[in-house]
Image (cartoon, rainbow, N blue to C red; front, side):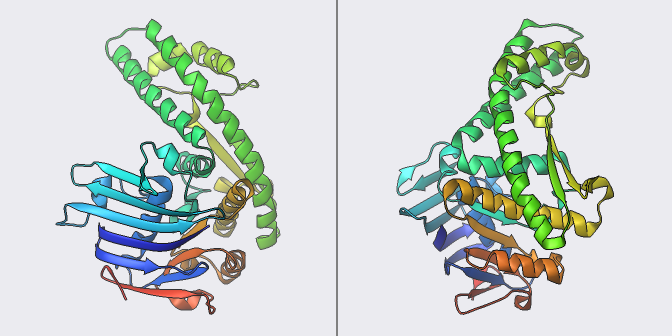
Length: 360
């Protein structure tokens, strides 16, 4: 899978830009705050349907413009695709692939697969559980649209349940039959999401262990920590688990159990990396997991995703940089950097110099 062309208009700090990529290494370089990361963000938008850093789509529109328009041409092993995204100031967004309007995010994520490496990803080990859940969700959603659909349905029902719990606590009410209705609805999607996460952790664990050993000779282990601790992952078992804990949730006025509170534990040499790992061990574990993420996508899809490396080389020492460079050699990669000397270049490497929202 590789991207052939990207065209931007009114996006972030780009009045207009067009880039034609090499199927292998592409280096997007320049000083800080010139718009390098915006290129990766545009690609990520076509893969995930949302920005990896903006809270709202309106933030993506260039100051003074009425809309942002993005076009992309890419292909996989079977066919070519042309995608378009338009974002208006009123917040409306339209997406199409090969001139077919995409109504659901779960449908969009089945086309272009990417894996993003950023300095924030180094917080995968020591950051909040939300960072690790996002790592799981972005991986599985790209391959199984039903997973994202289940997750979106779950979150919608969860918001309704939380509103109910908050209202009941505020009014001093200690029971409501509607609560059981929401729990039963949540249990249906919760069980499906948990099963998918279990399978993902099992597969990613095997690949990441091998990568960690190759980089540092250390032993890595990733453990799934579900909020709902039930030996039987079924809608019925999850519903029973939630029902038994309704009283506690009523006391707190919030949902205390469910996939929104899942986490993963990462061990290096049998010690929890978050608490006892050195910064080098934590970064190696995070890098191993991100590379394993791309291997996981390749295993399922039969081809590697496009790799987006956002100023990651400057965050790694020489050994990890060399290892990563070797792993990405035969894949399409878009790299942002302030220093091109950190990146191995060959005859297939294409350079893009970015200066104040202009591609030189």
